Image (cartoon, rainbow, N blue to C red):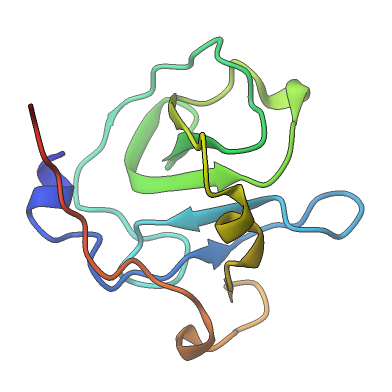
Length: 128
């Protein structure tokens, strides 16, 4: 919430760091202003793995190490039961999966151009 309110995510692209075994999209990762897949906000928080299923539309923290998370997060394109319990999943896309399927990703591995990737324009947090 702090990073979102501070504008950390504004203008950051959705990136592709790896592909699924069959060559399809694995997840869309965001939250890295450096557009390298390695950027952090300068601090980390303890990783809290959850038992929530690593399913299509799962929103999880991108782990900067095996024991901590930074500011990056990902959205899963499919169901990956083997990854359940290995990440902090804090949300689930419940509608709009068609938008996820159409998202253009920055291919960090292939030196893609950030101008071809969809990005987070801004984040607005409302509380009730």
